[in-house]
Image 1 (cartoon, rainbow, N blue to C red):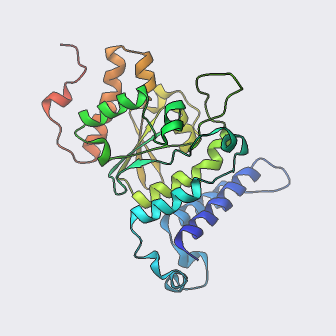
Image 2: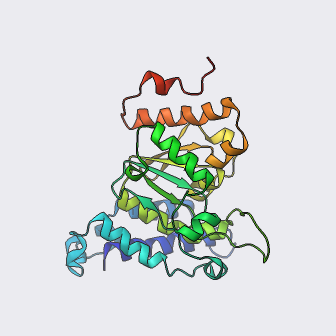
Image 3: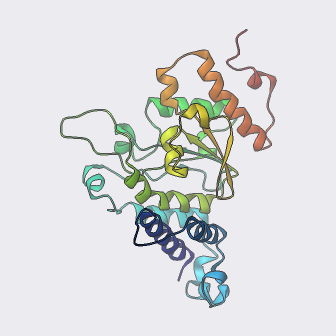
Length: 272
């Protein structure tokens, strides 16, 4: 059994238990779900099976030698034919898996692909993507140095003739989250930036206003997560005060990553 299959199996167990939590005839405790999630995050296969961890990997000798590029490519190929949400599979042009450095220290997680992303197969390539790229560059990174993904890999479907975008449903996000979990495990970023309320809801099932979530640290397993407004919010709200809020969040991210912050960076979007 490969590491990837083991992780996928635990993801299915977690999802099944979460679905059972609301039923009166079956008891799936939060502690049990958390314990399995911890086991999944630690990768401690020895605790999950009586077989020795080394013997597990003997079934797949190449598992240790796989690079992140190869492992992500394998995961991408699985996601590219996913039909967990048949309506999304029928609507999409392509699966928008993710893009960037497979060993990135910094990872951005958004909501779902829009029309531009669906056609190009890359996240954040529309107007919001252009703004995100500017934010990344202002932080001192190139877009190719970070990793960018979404909670949902498929564009949410729309009625015939409708335009625009819709938010993912809870079930759609639950179906897709295992792919993102595995991306995070493979990349092992030092910090994740969650872009917008939908991203936070997908990661943490938090349905709170972004004003209550942004500007403070959350934890996805062992990875610190900074919540901030989605770039599309800044496109709708051009006020300097809103831009400054997002930038203050990014300064906290830079500090957490141990990056040097210049005086110019500290003073962006402050009233002169």
